[in-house]
Length: 271
Image 1 (cartoon, one colour):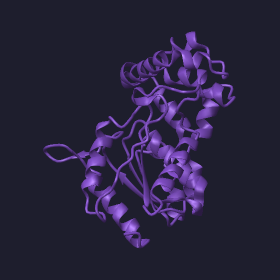
Image 2: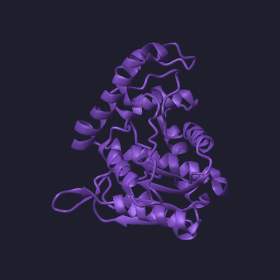
Image 3: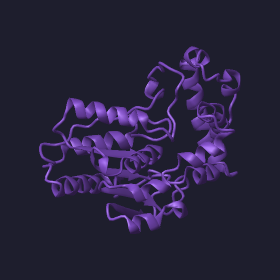
Image 4: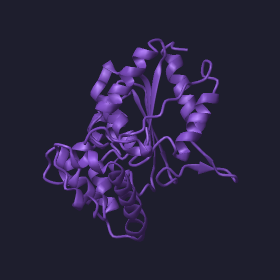
């Protein structure tokens, strides 16, 4: 599951999918990538957008996979905001989770802290982060203009097309969808930090100390220490999803993720 605005086209997702498909886990893995609403040029069929709070789409996908492949063990991997959704889902499900394992990579456990960090004045935020995201959101809005305009949610389409930051877009869309005054209340309720303690599925989180998005000080260390189902790999460097190694850079976590999945499935006698 990708992060904000990401999709199955992302380099790190394609690399992990290829790695898992070729691993010697039983006869290899069959990989399914969840494309969030409106991403990967997928047309919207309703006014509901992808967001960081609602796990219902992911639940529907898991239910559909269980129905289609009832004997197959399922494992979830989430990146960035997708990792936040996966963490929330596993905490919501508790010991009823249909997943055999979960891996969260660069999870922003505190979405409110993430939003504060990316709205600080800096060259990266003002020249890279917000222009890149807002341009992507505007393109998505343009492609689905008629569907969004006709939605009963009552979007202000002119204002959405003129946003200059993530907070402006979220205040006009997600906050409005869930009846928040503005995006900041929506951010507070979207966090997964309080769900880590409720996870009852083997769960690995991979984060870095220098991540400007998934702020290290907001990682719920106490929940990881208290919950035997969870493990945290905290790396000194890597930024946000920049976990590369070697003279010819390769993604570092490909083998550790496969090893964790293999161990989780073996311990449950699923392979």
